[in-house]
Length: 249
Image 1 (tube, rainbow, N blue to C red):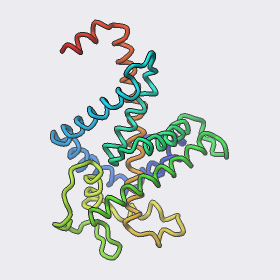
Image 2: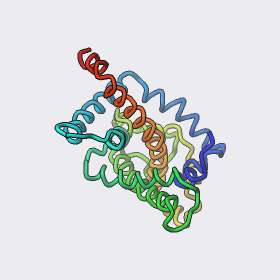
Image 3: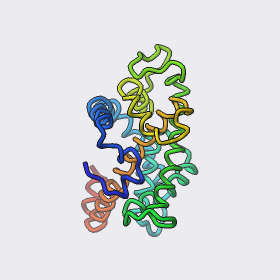
Image 4: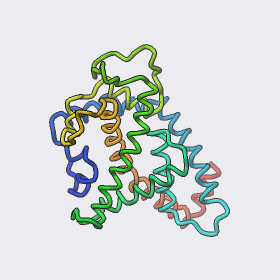
């Protein structure tokens, strides 16, 4: 897949996507993780979470309002859903802070790829680094809770301890996937240009790696889902009898 230069600068993982190791990771994602996410039980759980979040979102942003601007509100909902499903972030204040940074990232992607101080691309690169650091903190905390990726005894092919719960949320499944199938040489190589990379714990390196995986997934669904929902709402407004039939059904 080809990505514009602006996207490749903002999302470091995409810059490295052409390497053989990265392609192995991509095949593992498609072959191992994504089918797991699409299982009926996982989808049922995700739909329940999204439905609950949607009801709360309507109560906060739509109910009893004289006017609603659909597109930006659907972006809030989509980003909140992604944060909750992928990272279990349910703190509204924290989500709002991350959304502000994410919008800077989004503006940097849809711009001329000139990386100079003050340009949208430059601001987007800085914002993406802050977001990934926040994501990595959350992922590392979950890794600590799951007792994975110990510095002194790490092997991507080692069996998971029986004491580690096979957690069913998406974040835990991504961590377990990384532990089972990933390529430690590729993961470590992503950050080899950092002078302090050899001083980082393996746990932090993998947390940063997973954070860089989550960011493009959220980017991919941000505008696309919001656009579809906005067009659907426009259709309902212009043809209210269709909406009545949907509600009645």
